[in-house]
Image 1 (cartoon, rainbow, N blue to C red):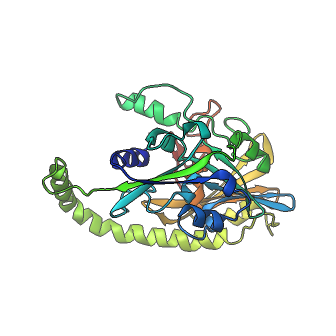
Image 2: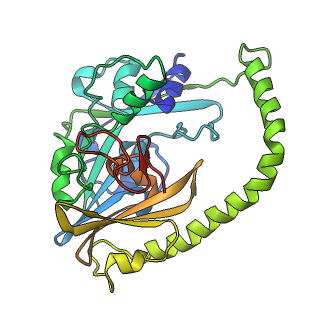
Image 3: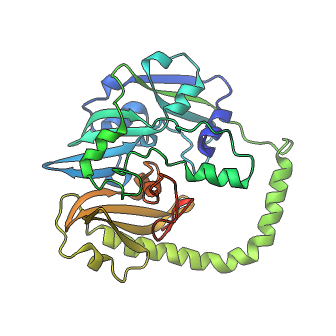
Length: 339
């Protein structure tokens, strides 16, 4: 279970108010209409989706998290809703028991697939295939982390670049949920830790640590901020040159050459296909990453920084032939890709 899911599960231990929307009522709607219907943040933008050029049409894949009811915990521990927090997930017809948190957690990750701007299908990310218990030490933790992206739908086979087969990859998402499934949200009070709580000592230690590290922070923070601003400025300008279906004026190697924070990878089994990885400014507490798939000089897909992590595309970039996270390409490690 992720830290975000764990935080949600802990927060939702008290009675709350739930809403349910049948998937059948969402089919055919635009991303903005789906967001409004579900109480999510308004007006989704292309930056938040994986966009694939498929002949004359465009396929857009949004992570389910984009349509969580607000206020929600989205993984940035520095941003905490006040008063209540909502947990949302796609729940199958057989798991509709009122108040059950487990189906919500299981359905909180997946994909909403739009074709030419209308919702075509909703998919769930299957649970991890291994049954290993929670890691007990650093060695087990490393092995567990390396396997977190196993069964990723994006590469044709482990070790290949993600989405080298372009829109065909949608078929690997697994079967779509039926129209009888629902997008359910459960919103409950979220209490703040008090000064007398058992964690008050942790707050004191954190404050002491912050005071100790302040001189280092004061020196390095301006440099880090300048780097993030440069990455956003230069990376954003490069990203603006790509559009799904468009022909590039030059080979992707030429566009990426000399650009800081930009890497280009070619698929060894299909050299006509390449991915351009572009570092952007901070998104939450980590650098943003955009990925662009190119065949010859044609842009065949793009994923903005709000989609690469939530859809698991950055992890898929670093899978070895066994389907484990590894140092298979520059920027990759057993923790995934870092711009």
